[in-house]
Amino acid sequence: MPWINEDSCVGCGICVEECPVNAISMEDGKAEINMDECIRCGRCHKVCPQEAVRHDSEKIPQEIEENIQWVKKLMEHYKTDEDRRGFLKRIEKHFNKEKTVAEKTMEEIRDLKG
Ligand code: SF4
Ligand code: SF4
Image (cartoon, rainbow, N blue to C red):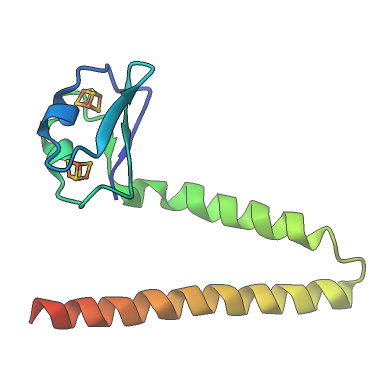
């Protein structure tokens, strides 16, 4: 999913004009994508003269770090090693479930390709 690097965006508005579903607006001189409206056509990537529209994959390290910070925060509520181990097992199950959902979804998407 596309996202805007605010440091690179110069607010030219080209992406706003080009988006086929009006999913991009200008907020304080920077482009902002409404992900509920975006149909993932990729046009904003192509037209941005500043390469300010970035790919989702670039956020992987940041999202991993956010997950780890979340886990550490929740872990603070557990006082004993045993409780913390139980908690971490449940968290692993949570991320395993997320992985399974992603894998099964991709299988179905492959079927859609025919
Ligand atoms: S085209 Fe690029 S620089 Fe121009 S408003 Fe959109 S994201 Fe910003
Ligand atoms: S990917 Fe397409 S639909 Fe989504 S914001 Fe960019 S131009 Fe609009």
